[in-house]
Each structure stands twice: as C-alpha cells, then as structure tokens.
Image 1 (cartoon, rainbow, N blue to C red):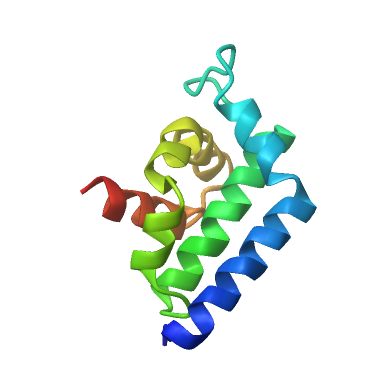
Image 2 (cartoon, rainbow, N blue to C red):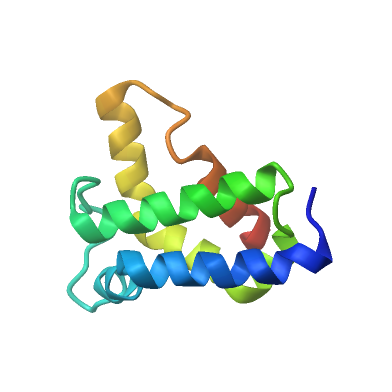
Length: 113
C-alpha cells in the first residue's frame, strides 16, 4: 500500500532507473516533431522504453505500491500514452494479448479523466 514515508524514495528510484535506461532520450524521441504516433512501431527502441516505463509505473500504482496522486503530479502519463498508445494497440493485436500495457493505459485514463 502506498506510504508517504516510502513514496518519495520510490519516486527517486524510478527517476534513477529511468535515467539509467535512457527514458529521457526515449521521451524526446516520441515528442519529436517527426514522430508519427499513428504509425509508431512497438519494436522501436524509444517506443519500447516508454511502454515499459509506463507499464511499470502503472502496475505500481494499480497495486498501491506508490501513490497514484504523486505519480500523476510528477509525470504526464496521459501525454506519453497519447504518443505510444497506438503502438501498444498494435502490439496487442500482433500478440493476441489484450492485457499488454493495460496498467499504463489505465493510469493515463485516470489522469486524462
């Protein structure tokens, strides 16, 4: 369950993991002027990184391991999903697994709603 005493520590650890995995470069790529969210390929390295990052954070908030309110105050999840959501749908169709990235999508919907 989310705990204010540990949420800050987890947030810093998520930021460190993101930095080590190159999430800054990945987000820069998906927000670039020449990125086409409608034809984004789920196998593209930047798209994959953002999908995994969002799904991990979505899973943590769904299971109340970190405060959803804190995450949504920190990150623009809905904006990330808007850029890579179509790629997630493509991956779902290709694999026949509708649950792929569902926690990322749910978190984005919570922020957008």
